[in-house]
Length: 299
Image 1 (cartoon, helix red, strand yellow):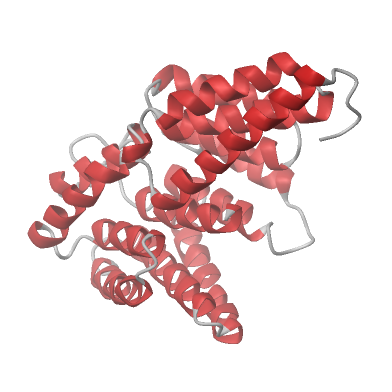
Image 2 (image 1 turned 120 degrees about the vertical axis):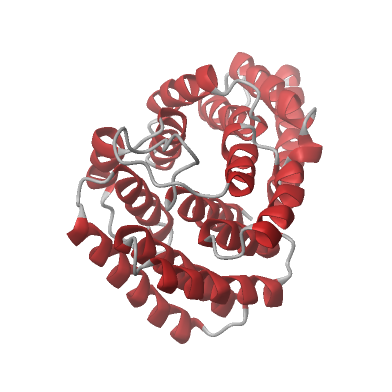
């Protein structure tokens, strides 16, 4: 379930990070690239507000009104994956590739980024079909187009955020860690801050540097305090610390953040909702056991 959630986060991240928003590019302070305002609204619903329910309806409008905008198509493919509608995901992944190919003529950086996104999504579909060899082949195309985008502007903030998140996703499957490069890419180039801080929090969580993860989560929450995904992530990190330290206070704090996220679970993606409910039930059991036996050696 954790891998699936990370795939959804990665694919949505790639979709969102490969495009700026209308009249105010959140990644660049100069030369903003406009997109449709329907797509912008869906972007904000997911990443600023953590509201997938609203984003679903906004994306339907965006796809209808802005059919050549690859950001909308890629985000729609990602939500189809979350709903286990893999054929729909495949269709939108292919549409993302076609739109990106057309975009490459006037904006080669974004065009190549979206081609990488489209191939990444197609690889996810192939993995779900059990065609792992073909999925690995798509990974080569992903890196090829990311590299082409990098040759255009290696310091581009959206490019570096995308590449960092791609490295984070692939680290789940490879024994080699590039964590120092990932962190440097996020810290030096990534923007906007709330997405950068969220990405760094996940990176430090996976490196088991939990105090650092919490510091970045606090920064992200300061900017987007009502995002239930961030509340869930903070509860998750506190629970890990509480389990390791057999610390009742930390476990109770984790439960508090889980319950804040659960109050808005109707707007979360299906996979996150399932995992959130599972972890909330588990931390309640862990609190009860530790209250009954403070000297408990392990859960």
